[in-house]
Image (cartoon, rainbow, N blue to C red; front, side, top):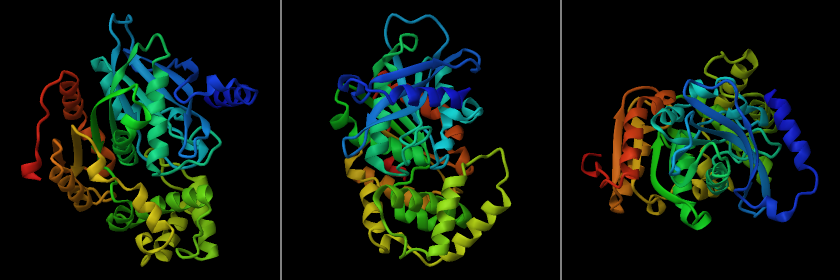
Length: 373
């Protein structure tokens, strides 16, 4: 049913649409979700966004709100930015039957928030997903918040916080960077990032889980080479380039299923092939990685970062270095130390993060942990 819905929307959108209706942030459709957690109502949405080229793109996501009467005032909004699910069209979180179970941000709905969860560009839509491309992803997040305001039952306001994990933490930080210039009609009150990739080349090089590094590198190389025509010759030979493309095209990240034998063998091959390769030193990959890394000087506060000292995918030392750079700029930073695994970063810090976000909406002075980082 979900796939049929997406296909019908794309078919309908293929007909001529007035230019005014294609404005970034405009809602195209909102289909009520039948099977939701208790106390939660939700819609599968399609809306317009734009990329760095100014092209209008149809994208999808989920909007969730409390299942109760519409309040007299607009509800507070949290933009939930998901971690890596893959780069293939089929990997969109909104298509997953496990969406609500694995989305930490949904916890905020029970506390009265509207949660806007974009799929990003290219997931559940036939455009290549710009994996870890900051500005394009941020646009899709901000336009999702705009589009949610057109759903009467959601009663979403224009003030929002952004909260993400892993790839989504990178998206959250980029959303904070671009919010004022791209969406001046919205009011960003807080940014929360759980296990954020900040220095992309360093994260792809320094994470201690070599198999995860190889798969994420494959997603990155496939996405950027497809979108921008970058050659992989300096990274892998032609045979291994084919493996990289197949890994990205055929695999979505799923914690419920064991990887197939072909995936395991492919990952092991890429581990060996890229063992001594650092994309920071290979052009144009290095320049593009730096351009899409997060500049601490550009991230506004207040800011929360949650990082586990035992994270094997996002190197803790890289995150801490970024946090220190934020502090040197005088930005108020809430720092949460954890000891769990990477996939638990947002869930383990959810209660504290939602509480911190609520205080920012209430206008309380933000705490600052810079002296103990």
